[in-house]
Image (cartoon, rainbow, N blue to C red; front, side):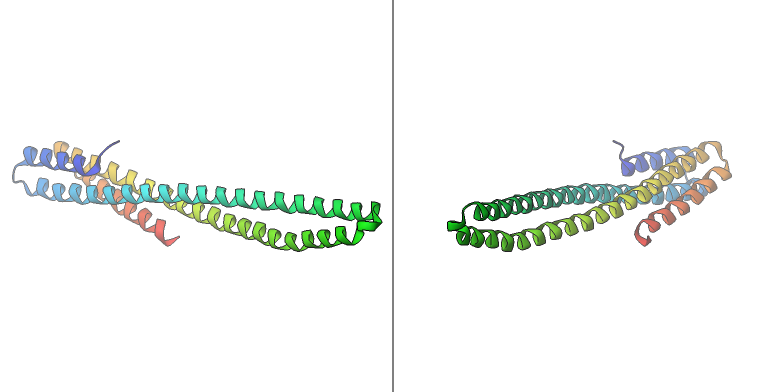
Length: 186
């Protein structure tokens, strides 16, 4: 695992040793430091979104399990109701007792069915939420990558004195900011 703030500090020290009090180097040190801060923020937000996506996926799985259990209970109650109905047909002397139990099973099924449907609804909401966090993760991952590349280009420009390198790094930094913003806009 890499540490963007530590890398930025190392790059900044390298810049200071390379250029002394050169204004070009000083400006690049500021650019690299800013990009490192952005990379750290994007990386941390990316990790948070990953955690949220995994947590909501786990909650969705639990809701699906609850729905599955409720539907199993619903089916079992349905079978019991049918058995009591058949038992009443086969044993007319106890038909009233069996009909009463069958009616109770039928009433119980309505609440079990509601519980199953509610759990499925919760599961669907959690799955959608998890996908939303996962999409944010992808945007932030791309942004963090661009910030890292921008840091590398800007640092190399100190040694090579190629202005197009730090300018490319600055452009990538701006694109990274746009991608990070897109994570929260969409």
